[in-house]
Image 1: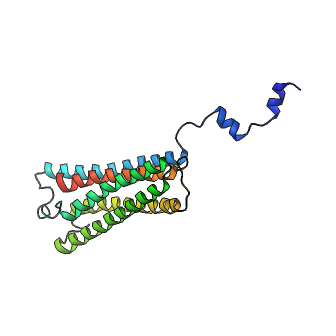
Image 2 (image 1 turned 30 degrees about the horizontal axis):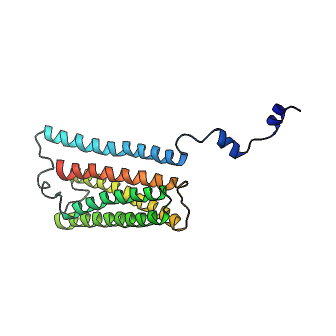
Image 3 (image 1 turned 180 degrees about the horizontal axis):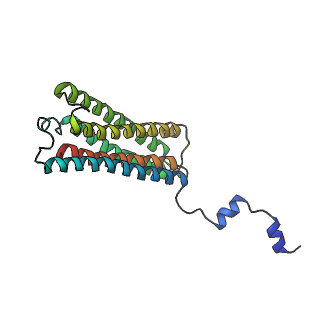
Length: 214
């Protein structure tokens, strides 16, 4: 039996395969998250499109936007500004956690994730408080015409995405506390981090549109 025939009969091990053909491309789990984020980009693009189309139609007809009586209701007061600052800072702590685990610092990652989780929950509480204030003090709700429907639909769906991010961060934090991540194996942290940055960017767009451009 020749050396070539022996090579054919002897199966290659996983180590041999990876040694000769190193892994390339994006991890499938991370790719799945990126594709999901792409679909959510289209979703929010539709909401922004509906808002600006309605706004342009109203202004084209000579009608005020926001509708008269609501122009002073939606103001960038202390609560939405504080919520925005907290969410932006949470994106920084999330990235910090990702950098720490890339260096093998699981403790640093866990601390950053815990801080990010607290910030995410705080944002949701502030948003809930802002909703209650708008309804109780101004009678402004989702049934307050097309403007109210758009405002609460856009911010409400974003809040639902923040809640989803909070759940995701909670899961990877629990896994991190159980020692499941390392410098070489932390793809779940990468995926949740990408999602959280997406949520942050969307809110910046919403905040600018709803509270300043109107």
